[in-house]
Image 1 (cartoon, rainbow, N blue to C red):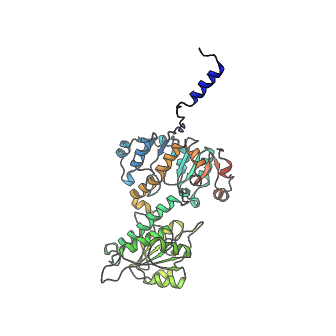
Image 2: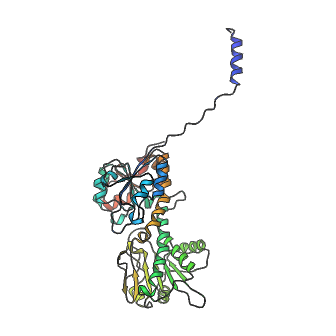
Image 3: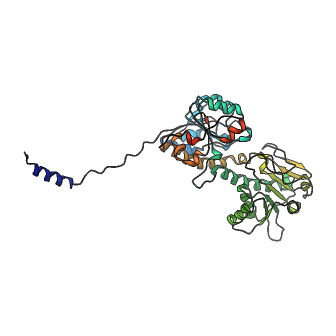
Length: 406
């Protein structure tokens, strides 16, 4: 046995030079989420929040997904597909609202608020103009964390869902117009586009946002002649740059717009207003001057519409004729292509939900992800939306004051 202090010290120094075990960082344990997908009950809403492929991805990552029987029928997804993807199929709606996270397409209804057990996360759209005050009070009373997916920003600061649905609405609106121009839809018997030797269809797009951009792309792709109007010169410039074509553009001036509409075969209304009603820029007199059998598609109808002659229609009875012009004024155009829209929503939300699980739940994701936090309007029963607070005269707090510090 070695007792000499100097010898022991030398041996210890030699030992410190030997290879040591590597100290690896301990990875944070993932949280298992319990997600419920209810069947949509809103009028003619056919979309579903998550498609079976997205459910399979979530289940494979250790999460539990419960879907209401028949929730995907409107988008042509069967219960069998969801079951094979690993979801639990529930006939009782109450079982869906017992989940920790409830993911829905349409805004919360009174039934949704009544069925929730409390202290849950509710993700859906939010329509401030039509959101009843009583539903907000019920969500607050049940300590719900409510997130509006149409206010969530991506890493580039873009409202991802709004842009995606705008792309769908813009493209679909032009396809609808093409169908309505045909002889068997009481149209002029024209093809939307152009072929050699035949004058191309004249299309006017009012609004240079996402909807207007994709309506323009579709019309140009079919060979139509397109004119785009908007009150924002920067939007018109951006549209030209994004499309990569010197399409005709103009600021909305009544005389110039009236002249274009008089010659048009199709007019797409795609103006949006940040708050309140969409400005009505097309008068009834302008509609009267249009060619018989022309088509008007008012995508802005959910905010009041930008045509004086517009009135809300639905997918069962989508059109009416005024002054010889066919009007299509369905608010929820995305439901017309519900399967495509459902895949688009899933592509956005399945990565977010996975990130939520990796961070240990919705509260942690709200704290860490600024874009996701932007969609929160109720946090654990506290109203955090200044707009809703002022509209309904309710107390609200800045969400930054409520979040736990790192």
